[in-house]
Each structure stands twice: as structure tokens, then as C-alpha cells.
Image (cartoon, rainbow, N blue to C red; front, side):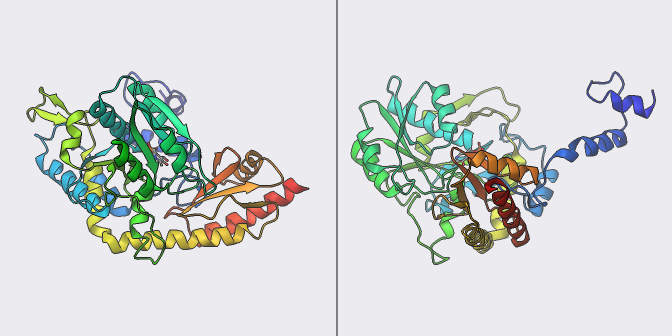
Length: 399
Ligand SMILES: Cc1ncc(COP(=O)(O)O)c(C=O)c1O
């Protein structure tokens, strides 16, 4: 078979394997259409280019499986150390948790725990309408009823509506610290009080904000309360594969203490490393992810992460200033973190997103607005060139 013939058949499993060089070449060609973070064109994602140290570690340790900790006890210990560091970041050195596949899995684990602890038939879950769709998935999987409550004028969960939604069936209330659409932080302090008063589980989804908000105080910014300092908070989602600069998959779930996870722990008897207890959805789990999280926390330290957040917030400010100078568009609300909503007052946001995409910009579309996330891969030059294109797009659409 000629090379040409081989390549033509690259979408079928060949009878006889192809040389590595052919595979690598073909992949290079096939993957050319994918966007890259380094181009600066990805402006609507909560993921980013992983830190170079994490990439190196990932390659070096990719065979480690935390689903079988008896085989990899040292890797399992590093995961525990990473969890302890994340716990400290969220004001609780006794937190117990796991680096999991995603924020979605973390949220599922929280609701699963709350459901099993409450022992109620078809329990109810109270979330703000701004909550991530992982709660819809979790409720469907766990046979829970999702109750979505309205937002206040600042796009936060309306506290009064949240309290009114509590019934004898409520098993968990969820507050978001850095919403998916606008990066808003719900009034977690008040939610904590409601949770304590009604004896319900409070989960905080800080999948994105967990690596941003802990540095606000030191940066001299208004620091909303959201973590384990609040006594009602039972668990927190914090994803290292978002602002933590870790490679995917590195979601994270932290529980207040080890007793919480008893509700979902399962004995796995058959493993080569010996019997173990698991409280994750996944069985086999990437050890490289946890080791990379450990290494980044150690390497960057508080100072390093604070600098990343500071830079992202500085560029967010530049973006907002620029947007406010373009006719026909405005920000939805003053951003709390490095997530900005942009709305058009002349055309549908979908048209703006479409025109931007024609110019190579990948922004995220939400009902009525566009979301920009100023992630660590975004540089000042990218913001400037985006604003220039946005200005042209708005002129065209206005014309
Ligand atoms: C607030 C929030 N929670 C959870 C998730 C889900 O995370 P993942 O995509 O890692 O499942 C996201 C994703 O953007 C999010 O913004």
C-alpha cells in the first residue's frame, strides 16, 4: 500500500499497523483545525494552557492510577497533600476530598453525599437559576428534584427566594462562587445561615472562583465570604483545571471533614493493590492529575497564584474599559472576577458572536449575552486586537 492509500484510510482501523511517523504526521494535519490557547483567540473558555511544569509531570507520571491506591500509595499520599493545601486555601486544613474528573463530577459527589445523608424520598435541591448545568445532570442521575430560584438585581441568588424554596424535602442548597455566565458570587454568608437554621446541607460551587477569590483580600479587593469559614458550608467544588493551571482532568471536591464522605463510600474488594474505599464516580483515576496539582501548588505557591489572578483582573479591567467605548454594546454587570458578560443593545448577541467567530474569536454564548473569560493565556495584545475587531463588528451590524 502506498502512503497516499494509507492516509486515505486513516479513519478505519488498519489490519496492519501504520508507522509512528505516519500517525504523527496525520495527526498534525487532522488537528490543525483546533484552536489553541496560545493564539489568544479562545476568549470564552474557563480552561487554559496548562503550566509547563504540569505538562512535564503529566507525561512523566501518566501511568499512575489512583483508583488502585494500594499499587500507588505514594501518589495517593500526594493527592492527600494536594487536598490539604486546597483545604488551607479554602480555610479548612481538615477538609477531605479528591481530585476528580471535572467540576461536574465534583458537583455530583456533593449532591450524592447530601442525598444519602438526608435519606429523603425524591429530595429537593435548591440552586440559583445561574447554576451550572451539572446540577441538572446530577439531579437526573440521583433522582432528585431541582428547584431553581431567581436572582436579585446583582445577578446573585435571591436570598429570600432561596429561603422560601426550603421545604421538608430539601436535601441541599447550592450557592455559586463565580457563576459560569457572569462570574458572580452568591451571598454564601446568608445561605450558610439559612442552611444552619433549617439543618440542610450547603454546597458551594467554586469550580472557577476557588482559585480566584482566596487572593482578593491580599489584592486589596472586596473579598466575598464563600469558603469553610462559614459554618454552614459542607462541601466546595474547586477545579484545578480552570484557574489552577493544571492539565485536564483536574476537578476537585472538598468536604468539611472525613465523616461526610461515609455516606457515599463504597468498598472495592478486587484491586491488585488490595481492598480500598472509594467515594468518587470514577474507578480508575488519573494519578498524574493529582501529582500535577500538588506540584503546581508547591511551585507557584500563594504568591504565584495571586500574581496570576492579579494579571487576569488587570486585563479584565482593560477589556471592560474598551467595551465601554464601543457603541452598541455594554457590559451586563460590573465583573466581580475575570468573567465579563457583554450585551448588545442593537442586535441579538448571537449575531455578534457569529461575526466574532468569522474573525477567529471563540466567545461563549449565553441567553442574551456573550461571556468572555480572561484566562491566564490571554495577553494585553489579544484584548486590544479583540476590541478592535469588536468595534468593527458592531459598526457592521449597526449599518
Ligand atoms: C461554576 C461551574 N461549576 C461547574 C462547572 C463544570 O465543570 P467541568 O466542565 O469541569 O465539568 C463549570 C464549568 O464551567 C462551572 O463554571
